[in-house]
Length: 160
Image (cartoon, rainbow, N blue to C red):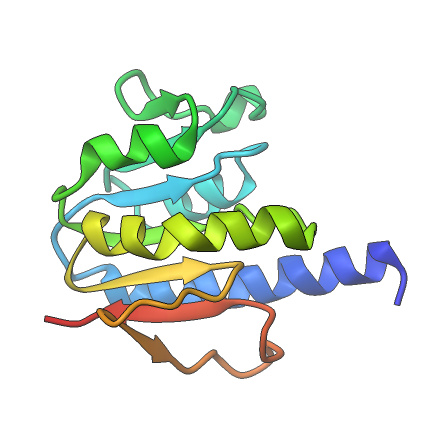
């Protein structure tokens, strides 16, 4: 499969998953956290699906399209592992973390800290959507929606 086809499949899966999860967290209190703002596509999509909701975005550097830059106070720049940890206990309804690189050695390092960080950020019953599998005793795996291939995205609910 070409990289273009793979990208299209990934974006289609991402949209399906985010639409499903946004509908589920719509009635939950708590902010939405976007770990890895990138160019702002998913931030913009979540903002459309959950209007008026506080969305805090984290990234190492600002690279988003100007129309997808969060308002002042909702954009945190720096090493995500460090900056997001400062928000532990915030009680997020949703954490979206599509910060995998596709480079196994780097992704394995991210998988060492991302599960614990997600648990610390979420409220009980909150959901994490991740491009990488997360292994943590407090995260219950959830099924993907129809049309999303296994291992394309990973969904978990924080237990407790």
